Length: 193
Image: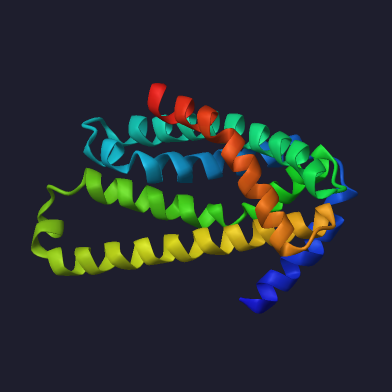
């Protein structure tokens, strides 16, 4: 894990010099949106009685909408609140940092798809015959998803500190200030639409 964090740090150090690769940014913002939206609306998706392909497509579309809207806004708010902490990063550098921090969401979304497939086939004989194995498997998946989420948060805060030339504490405060400003938008995105 230490080596993975160090490798990500070197990639993030160069983030402020790179141009934004929009396709990559939108892809990883979509993955983050799928993770966030599913995590917050999990009961809805697991109990939705629809065929499997439309269920997964709906999750990806909602993840795209939520992930792109929320991340572009939060990156801008981090840029604005960064002025309070004398941060030096450009909006593009912040976008690149978020993009690089989110690559573990590839695994998170794979776990989500496994959970959706398991919920879809819940009525099958195989699952009913192996409920203990299923329960253990779901607990392991939840733990892995939790570890991935913590890892992403560490990558994000550490990356923001590097790119904005702040201490980790100030980068965390900057992130929290932007998140506080983002709260009304977050409420509208998740609970009104």
